[in-house]
Length: 193
Image 1: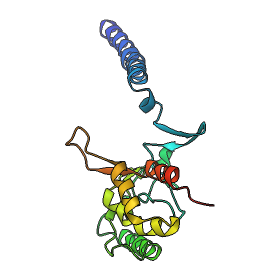
Image 2: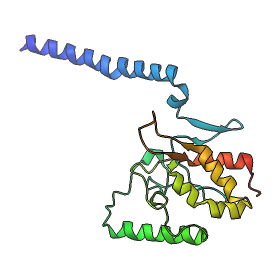
Image 3: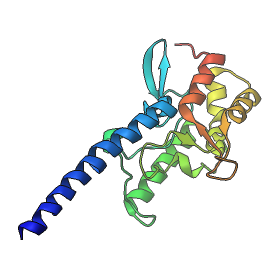
Image 4: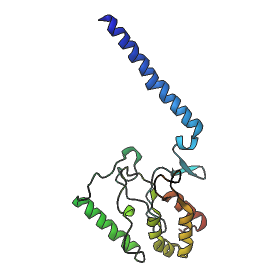
């Protein structure tokens, strides 16, 4: 019995050190060396202050800003509580929530097309998605143009400029990072307080 127990304990100890210590440290060190910004959370700074991350959405409530997807994560975009709503397409609470969001968005943006893009009224699976589709950004142009007193074509040009293509030319869909878009908007046309 002892002849079987000793190799099992030694193997458990060796594998614990290799998979629980050496491997995570090697991967972390490699990531921090090759991709320091991403390994650090892709943080966005403004005058030395962290204002967000390129990887986690934020809530923008002022009408002069582009809005992202709704979030079901904790109190909204709570990275420590990442989750979707887990409501199915036939769920009455989901149908009611989407209808309420559509009505709210249409009331805030009456000059926009009647069809509200789906990503403006449904949360992503993680509840943290920082991106919206170009269509969702373009849908918001009338409201932002009105609030900032800007020509709509200038906003559309900004959206096209800020649209990220498919990764490696074929993976994913074109998308717009809402935080980056709002920062570019403020850099070009600051919103008066």
